[in-house]
Length: 325
Image (tube, rainbow, N blue to C red; front, side):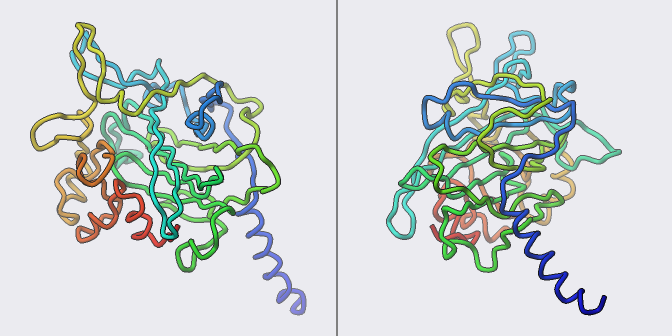
């Protein structure tokens, strides 16, 4: 037995690497709802993620569309109109190569106020961002996910990304993102021309990304599906009110300019704001086109790293987190 053990651990480590890098399908519970984009005509549709939602019987778990309610006299997230808001952006990498970012944004009614379990991020109109970074050969090199407040940031690079572009010491197996386990790397078959479908499993209530994988298939057996539309990201600033006027999903005046309406997080303000030196910590916000557009979209809680980790400057943001594209 003592002779076998030294061989056992290297083999186990090798298997764990394979399982971390290889593609797979998650085992999904029967009450999962998959949002599917049927049309794949444009690049924005082609790279769009497929979302899997837990406990869809609760309205706050379903992806919604932002509308103006005449009854409530406010903008809100309607779970009966599943919508992805998307746009394409570009940036120049270290080597002078141009990359495309396909940016996707979805919103939920919110995270419910709860004490058992306790939800630190309880609040309204919570959102998720998924960014698919593609090189000049239209190959996905990096998947980035985070909430629209800038928290719970996760990166999943692919085998199309050169090893020297990865942060020092990057683990290609599993990674722990504030209690959720995600792949550390996606291994993509370079002999296949089809763009792999990015699948994202979203946890109930907190809307945390709890798993992600690549797969050519867009359907999972035994899982209910629903169609989801893609609308331009800019449409969030022009919500029809029904009287020939429009309003925005974001505040347009005062100290909360650029923040999602009614996105205050009372528990994050109480427990976190004082040590990160930001009264509005955890509040969802508009992602500006550059550093002169909208509020600072910082992704690090370190007060001195706000500008360096700003998602609006994607190249600088990557540098802060150790990537060298």
